[in-house]
Amino acid sequence: MFNKNFKKIALVSALVAGMFICGASLTGKVFASDGEGHGGEKVELKVSGMSCGACSSKVKTALEHCDGVNKVEVSHKTGTAVVEIDENKINKEELIKVIKKSGFKAEES
Image (cartoon, rainbow, N blue to C red; front, side):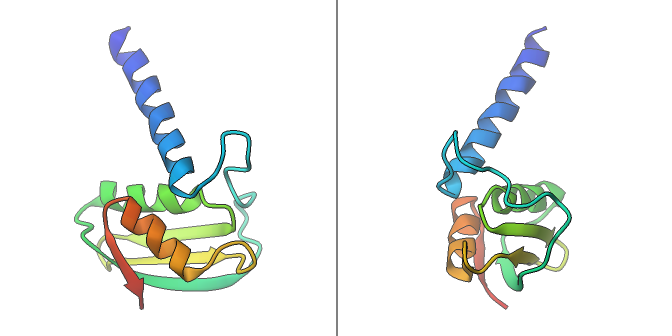
C-alpha cells in the first residue's frame, strides 16, 4: 500500500515540477499539441550530461510540458534533442533554459 501511494505522489510531483519549469500554471494548458506533430520549426540542440535513458526521459518530459512544443525526440546516445515548435509560442533560448533547469547543458547544434 505504501509503495503504491508513494509512486502516485512521486508521479504527481514530477508532473507539477515539469509544468513549473516551463512557467505553466496548474490551470493552464500543459501539453502543446495533440501528439500528432502538426508542423512547425524544427530545432536541434546539443545536450551534454545525459548518460542513460532516464536522462533522455527527464529532458524529453521537461520539453513536452512547454506550451508551443509539438514533438520531442531526445537521445542520450547522440547527445541531441530535436524539438518541433510553434515559433510564435516558444523559441530556442527558452528550450535551452528548460533543459538547463532539468540539470543538463544545452546549446544550438
